[in-house]
Length: 213
Length: 299
Image (tube, rainbow over all chains, first blue to last red; front, side, top):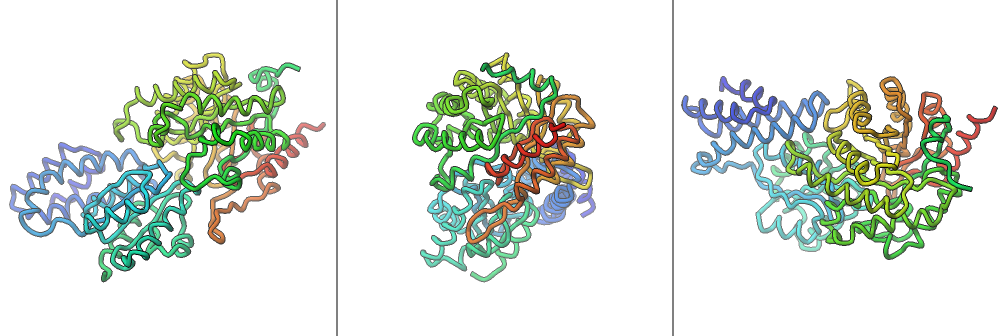
């Protein structure tokens, strides 16, 4: 699709109207909605994700790009639902119980949506029971958990244990992240994956979605 | 003896020592994961008195109140917003009662945890109102100064400073931001560098500026040097004891009191005037900082 680099640039600049215009132009010229999504919005957000990881852009740029992305997504969603499943799978995300820091988690939500996943954002201060119940309710294959405080990290282990107790391990998989969280901690509590940042969260969720379960 | 005015101490060039971490000490005394630490201002004041005493005995000149996460916006999340005034006031009263004239009581205000418009959906007026309420309560409890810390958005830091000045015009204001290393130098997650931060904090009237939290003492030394290059204000730095790691299910920090004190000495030589600790630092760290600062002052 020839407009994809233009869409990426408009996303980077956070120009919602321009993104919507480019998406509409692509649709009018006969490009399939799914292709506009994949090669335009998702590819464009991936460019921004890489720039964010390399510290070339910062949180405000990503947040503005996300707002612009939604302007394009709004045009595509009705067209997508008529055909194929628009989503690459559903993830439930939230900040664990007692933790009110949701900036990192929000960023992960934006990146995941930008990558084509359906995201159910449970907000912050989410109990282990809520994580598991909502994942079941929405048919989510992945639970993403965030914590900023060292004092709330054990809440992640509670979710892993609850999934085990309910016989859902391997059916619903877990990915964890946040400033004090590490790969070692993920292994210790038996989480299925650790994501260093929003970009790697997309990679890990993609991996987990493709696993059998 | 009357406490000498904080601003006078700064003007005569005294090097001051601030305290260290609070959260880890509370956890070691039975705070449960996920519970708001500030509730103990009402239910376990004896623990907070003990901690204030530990840091006072360690030689700290500034002792913080247990009110970091107590902005009303956050309190509402815990269903405690109607207790906001009381919890913040008690936080300061407990410390003031312990330290008397022997140290300055620092009223702590942390970020509200949400993103401001236009990037997020939080309105500036609401943030201002929250910080105003908190600062008033801290001042009424007897704070000698207000410390606005761990800020990652300059817009929010400026709102907090303005609110603190409105609530207590006579109190000195300390404002510290948290920076991440990038290939182009240190930036907040919102993309603001140290020069921009120093200007913006000074613009709204902060008395002391600097940085806290972050990636450990060595990174903080680089931050301190950059602050000195771009600002003439008195500078405050409170580094983490490194990055947290998990050992046997517990969170540990590896930077020792001796290591951090050596870097604290370098920070003072680089122009820092107040040195303290953030996550993972203990009364032992503050004892080492005190010794280092005294050694610098010795003829």
